[in-house]
Image 1 (cartoon, rainbow, N blue to C red):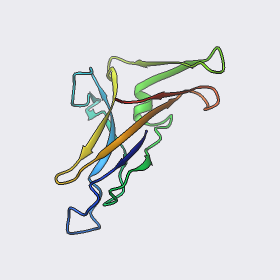
Image 2: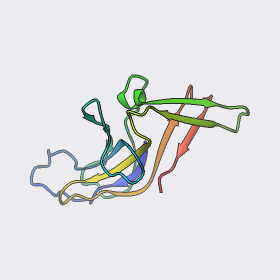
Image 3: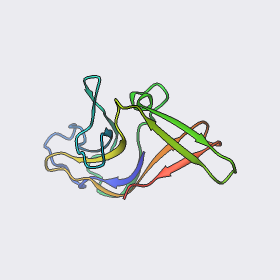
Amino acid sequence: MATTSCDQGRWVTLNQQDPSESWFEVLLLESTDDEEPKVVEGKKAIWKSHENAKAVGDLNIYEGTIFGPEHELTNAIQVSASSKQKKTCRLTLVFSEQTGNVIAVRVYAGKRWENHAESGQFIIVAGSKSQCNAGIYPT
């Protein structure tokens, strides 16, 4: 995932070594109406993607975690792709009944923090990048 985002642009804690409390998470939900992640094998299906730089206040592009083939998120879904022509790509996500039906992005800001996101992009790559790229843009 990548975002064009920033925090509030000023320090909200006395200790400048405190971690940022302005970040983005990827989670699995049962349905689009849910707000809390599914629990899979006793653990919430939620992973931190990336955070904004602290006290910057200007929009920047931040790229998040790449969930590789061994990651729990990747193991929770089966991704398959087919491309009959170079300019077309069909992407299918198959969820098992135990994992959830929705991949969601949560915008997080802690107490007194802000998270301003101008845009975001969640990219799913099935196979090599030259085979198939699919961009999903949240609204």
